[in-house]
Length: 542
Ligand code: NAD
Image 1 (cartoon, helix red, strand yellow):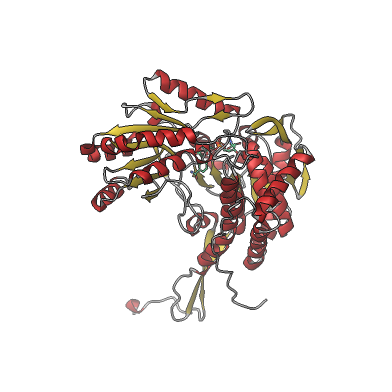
Image 2 (cartoon, protein in one colour):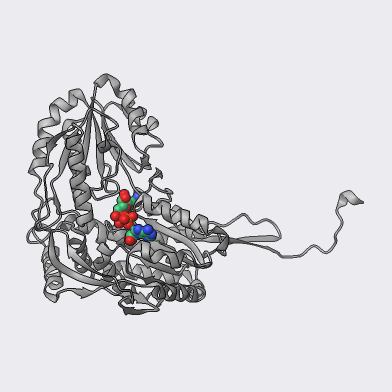
């Protein structure tokens, strides 16, 4: 085709309500029933375009968090031979994929977005609800809207990058060729967002790189559905090779490959640091310097100023800390509240927290559900007991029960010790630490928030006093990569709040922006001289 085409201008996918009587509620209910009626699925990998189980010996059950006897699927993990096959397949696929014109690549991912927005919406939301323990609202904003947005906006951002060209002068044409990295990208994704699981492999693939993708075991049901969507959208075999299994066991083969060109990771700080060290130790063996992009942990704060609107603070805390049971990297887990405001909101906050309905995801009246798995349950139960033992006050919640599902009640922990673990450690669950400060100590509390934890992902300030907002924004400039004023610190929207944090929270390459995509290209500059010089001397030599 001979044309300077433009990709469609993206707009954010509208969020459906799932209110009683709505058509989307009926579709979602029936998609949930079809998963459960069909019984456990074999959650295969995708090697050389062929879906098959891994050949490893480990076999995992994917179960419902809120009903752990309900098995949704089985994963036969990959082994080293599978990983070698995945890497070889990806490397082999690289040249052909790099040569596919951008508009053809874009059409595949735009088609995937439309499949998710239409025929696959209920199915991927149902998989995310059942597999990851999300309510209809939390699934909708993740596996439908955010993933659709990533796919559509990334196409537009890639076009913007390609349009960025150097200056050309008389007699010379300069061009920037945005090449893929050469080699393959290893995408390692977390359990908590189907959108992130889908974005990490597809963003690198959109920029022309073949990808080996290792999803989280507990997110495998929705990943399986997304792979189906990509196949339906026409993604060639091997461009994204999905390999299921446990990351620690599978990564050695990938990290030893000389063709490793990048890692696109989201998950815990510890695992990303491990991957980085491994790459560092192998650095001389790679054909290029692998790009390392990782968005990791957080200890996200809410700071209220004495001038804050009390109702707004309560809502920001309850929604920010307890939606999806605090299992968002952006979830509020430490709150700094002035004494005067605390006296006004204490009872309301406790009452609202105690009133949150927590239960099975199939009951749409619940506010949230169980935490992801037994490991998370044990970690959170341990943290509650540790807080109790530390002399902190449990103001609400503080109970847990794993008889049916991995249930941990939304919990408020108040401590006067700003170094208490509740303000420092990422527990990744429905635990909110509360530190009450003297109204006059606003300056000191800003320093405390900045230094209390190693992370710098999200944070929020609530105030009506403009000077206080400005002061907090300045003092906490390095304390959060996504900073919210008079809002909760969660719920970033693609195209509106590009996401990522600094310090121990990640490389801050801002998923959902052109800054992330830029990491997946290695530009070549081409200078063409129309009439070449033909003499060697310069005038000063005369
Ligand atoms: P995790 O680190 O346990 O797992 C993430 C992925 O890494 C999984 O696919 C897992 O199998 C793999 N993995 C685990 N050990 C590995 C190893 N040794 N080598 C290679 N891969 C390995 O994280 P999780 O529990 O899935 O997700 C929760 C964490 O993710 C939290 O810390 C949260 O803050 C973080 N997170 C951050 C963001 C962000 O944007 N900053 C977004 C979502 C989640």
